Image (cartoon, rainbow, N blue to C red; front, side):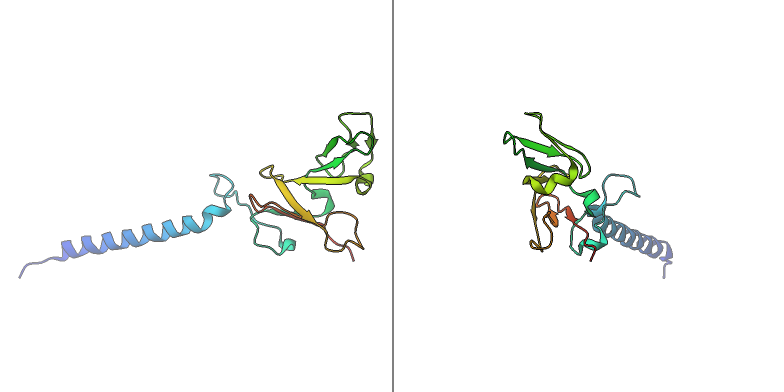
Length: 149
């Protein structure tokens, strides 16, 4: 009889190494969609209040995505990048305060992550005269207006 402990030990080490490689590969596949870059601490997670399966999201009027409205004076498109910015028409001298947003026709909202147009709407049109949600079909970013009732 010959002693084959060296061959058995080599086989066990190889099988264990393959098992570890498999666990690392599966872990990397599970975490990959959540990473924003190669930094191990850079993850994108959606806001808890959105109750969706989105990758990233925000809540509240102060975090509203950029919006494009129509100028009532000349019909031009006005981009309001932040909800608290004044609304200044690039074509004419019309300027509106941020609280006049609801007086203007909303044309589109733009995703702050990938810059694609977003779907938006209202759940309570008789209660609120602002968009209450917006979702990007491209990157799944989701924004919710936070209700205070």
